[in-house]
Image (cartoon, rainbow, N blue to C red; front, side, top):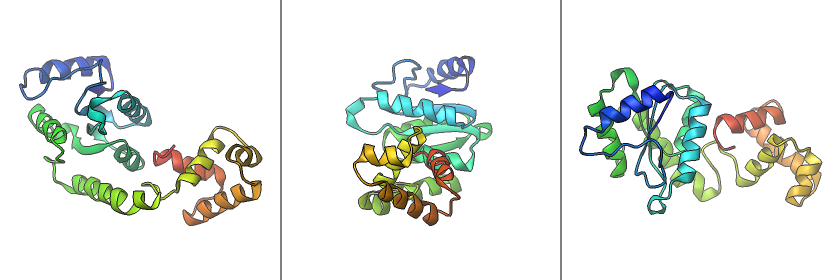
Length: 204
């Protein structure tokens, strides 16, 4: 489990320990079945921590499902969170520990319930879009091809278009064309805006 602060995390673990259905932990994520995040607001820092935990997780070689409980969930964080395995989003003010436990158990069993509200349906629809329409065509939830992500990643690292071309093994003209096409397709202003777009949507 992840939380905004140690007091919240320790308190939640102490409360959740009373439920027989789950065995909450805060240190060893390698064999966890579900990642539960508690926050006032889902920030970039929280999602970076989620990403780190999911890299460490080795349970059965499957993707670790994520349940987030928060009061604020900025729209620009949604795509990134879904890309990191979000299966259920609960509003903190309206969620008891009973509701949270049911959501965790459901996630562990491969179900998105409870919480079949607008947000839950949106999460399910984006998952379906990603799995059935984007991934088979080499795209992601941001609509970027693998090559575009690679280029933007190198630009984000501070490389020039010439250096990116040398790194990838193509001409600088090709790199400029890749950047131009994705900037035009997503109505972005320039390459800096394109890198920011990739970061916001969680593909970088």
